[in-house]
Length: 190
Figure (cartoon, rainbow, N blue to C red):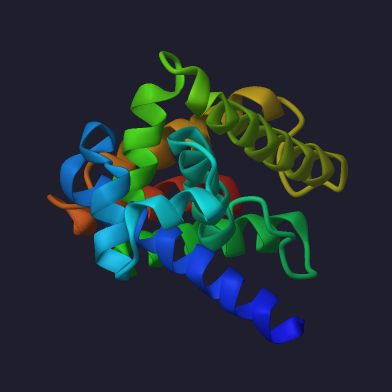
């Protein structure tokens, strides 16, 4: 039974990765079940075994995206400053190494306010904001940052910078790296 579950999970993962490729290449409007199925080498009808609707596939893509980027992952042990450094470094590295994931992130972000099927994006974004805000609050309490910083606004600024950078991954990765590094220097003193 374990083998069947593993094969099913592998197929599901392959379908999600194929959907990510299609979204990165053609945008969310270009996402077609038959195209995703063809990339994995299955019949389009078989897709519905793994994802009952196209919206379910999109939710699977979102889950994969946030998991792969590690946006909500627990940071390694260390000071809040070190944890923020780890978070920003991981995202910067992923942006450099796999710009296609950020193209998908941008597509999802652009549609989040207009589509019920993307409302899950907003849930993830809110969790990301809470994670950063809590990290910043802890850092302020422990004296790593001045108490005049507003954790809510700083968390929002970090997310806006990362989302804006995601829109630019194909054109100027060096400028993106420099901007992220500057933000980090402001916040971490490094």
